[in-house]
Length: 517
Image 1 (cartoon, rainbow, N blue to C red):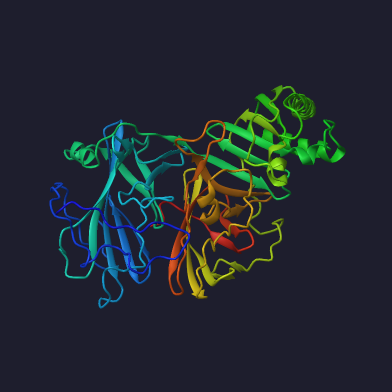
Image 2 (cartoon, rainbow, N blue to C red):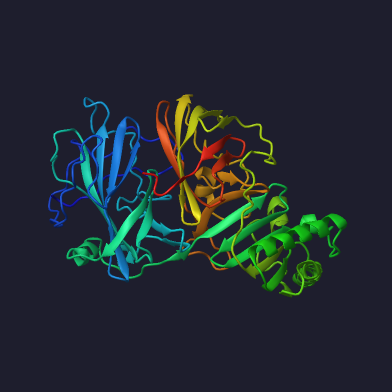
């Protein structure tokens, strides 16, 4: 085997260039590459069972069947090595195995890199995600193409290797950009080839672990709740609570705060509750600071009466110093006018919406546990739920969307760029235009949105976040399909409703236990 990276296409919001595709017979292997010593990928036959401990991920793209065989994760206690074999086979053997429309976008969000840096390990029970580690020259990850074809078919084969911070449990889940998730991958002690595998990726300088954040948003848009570890923050919109330049709670506002108190008592038995007032950037710093303090005090006083003696209330104002979103538009300023209620607890989702009663109305196409047909500005699509699997404190959902009509470029068809973000979350322009960030499970009173986590290298006081799921839902041609994977907080429901605002709704989807095998 010679060492060379699989040629991957850049993940963009425009159509693919017809001349750029996955490596095939016409894509030469560069000369001079040193042998890596990595084993030749196994050759899975059609419908074959993987070896013990190997978890397969299978999907299709543009007339190509793609299979990832994910080997047990090895760890020395500090770092972990993930290996996965890649097999890509054309449905029609007469087609050239260049497959110009096939993307193997393991580089992740906005990357054209060919090293698999977009792969992530996650453990929802521990509330953690592990991005690929960093070495001296970039991410500690590599993808190698097998030199020659060891099988009797027209498949292309390769092997991916990546290094992460060591997970805590006996198993971990693995998220592959565009292609789904391998659930319940065993974690084992490092073997003889561990050091060589780390060296193969270029070595490790730093391996990060990030806490994942759960996020819900009420149907009435009065409040949202975020939970990261045991830190819970309930955010109330100031425009719901106060008239302009005022700090007195109206009767409606008192009811909103009382509902927040009920939420706190459901999620924390006792403890300190800290109230923080925020304003927009209109008026002076001093005025805004004073207004935020008065508003925080008004909410804290109401909460103290509603919560009782088991809770200790504190409050402060931060004026305009910590905006929730960028910008000076009316929508941005409205999002920045808020009161946040912070406490130690655990997110609780009201789970009595299995029968659909109380769900918000929608004009979007709706189906019960079956495919739904939707139209965008440029095409028609059939969307179905492939699997909905319960993991520790989470549900991992996989959807398949096939384009059935339209011949124009249909960028950002899944959640169009003109659809506003649900909640004050910050994913960056590319992810917000094309990601699955608004795809929700519906509870009795709130949307349960996908997990996210703070991105590395974030700007101080304005951190961007990464979605634990499909950050880019690709543009597809008619007859092609895309896989969409999302990890949500567990709603506790036996059946769930999957909702993409203004796009589609699928009700009555059963949730299975285990790994989805």
